Length: 125
Image (tube, rainbow, N blue to C red):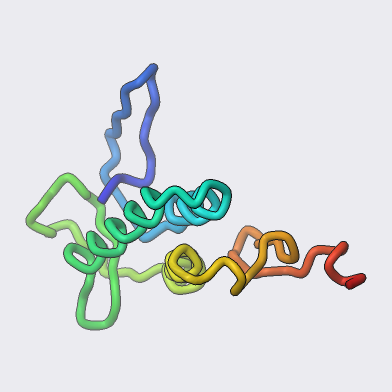
C-alpha cells in the first residue's frame, strides 16, 4: 500500500503522512491508462492494490483505512470504511478488468464520483 499523499522532487517520492483511506484516485488512473494503452502493467498494478487491501485492510465488516501504511503490523487501522471505497475505488477496479465494451469511453464520461454519463454526441445516435 502507498500513502494518500506523496511529495515529488525530481525522480524521488517521499511522504511524511502514512495514511491511506481507500481513496480511488490511483486505481482510477490505472483504469484510464489501461483504456488508453492496453498495457498489462496497469491491470497488474490494480491487482496488486486489491491484493494489498485484502491482505492488510480487510476487517469483519468490510475494509478499513489506515493511518500508517508504513506499519506492517496493522496497528493503525482507523475503523472506518469510506463510502467512496464502494462507490468509486471498487468500481474502477471492476472496470479495469472488465471488457472495454462494458462502458465505452467514446460514449460515456465519468463524473468526479465515478458515475457514467452519456456524452452529448452519443445521445444523438
